[in-house]
Amino acid sequence: MQNLNIEFYVFSGTGNTKLIADKIGERFVERGHSVGFHKIEESTVCSLRDNSVLGIAFPVAFFTSYPLVLKFLSNLPKGNGRRVFLIGTMAGSGMGLERYFKKLLKKKGYDPIGAELFLMPSNYNNNPTPVELNKNRVANALARATVFADELMDGSAKWGKGLPIITGIWSSLMRSKLCTKLFYFLLPIKVDNSKCIKCMRCFENCPTRAIYIKDKFPVINNKLCESCQRCVGFCPTHAIYVKGKNSEQYRAMEFEDFNS
Image (tube, rainbow, N blue to C red; front, side, top):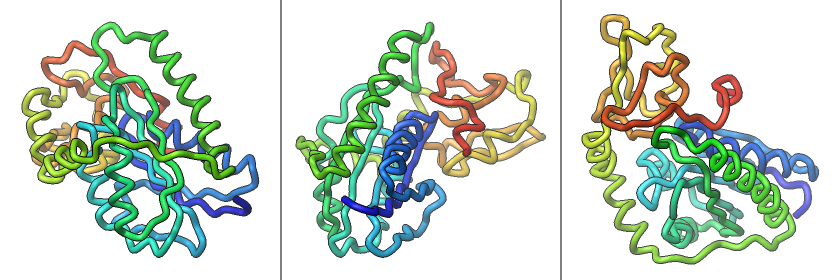
């Protein structure tokens, strides 16, 4: 591939996906290509330059991804043969979700050229956080991200196979938000007002606008929350937490880097 224009649409909760997407984009630029980054949660319309390649990156959740990501994919314009690649970050297994999304993209007229799932630290780490394990996972994923970018540019990238029926079932449940509602019911996200410094970081950066302000403190709207953990991971005083979960705060990068 020569002189590519990559339109990279990324959703990231606590930074895992952004970290990998940034690394892939960095490698594209090193090899003379241009990359435009876009936040999926802010992209009601996917704007694609002529002859550009579409990149899509998201966290894996319930063997698929979050409702806002699935909505974005459903609203993609017709591909008309445009090349597309996909990356996912996960703490466990994706159960071969690549095949499900490949079928979805091909149905819209895109040309799938490569997909990769990256094992990254969990957003729900039990206490204590496995520091060395996380460090090794991130290092291995970043190394693989560079290789994957080279494979995309050299035309040797693969698109994994799997059982699309599994991801299909979970995707239907995610679109209806049954999964996120159940997850929130079991592990609700709460705010400790005694620790809150009212910086409004969570309110301003919630991807689903699930946080509102009451009596000057943030409150989580469980009907809108998709449990991406962004507010939990980036709260500067650890005032936001998952009730009933003995866990430490996790984020893949500092807030300033996440928003850069």
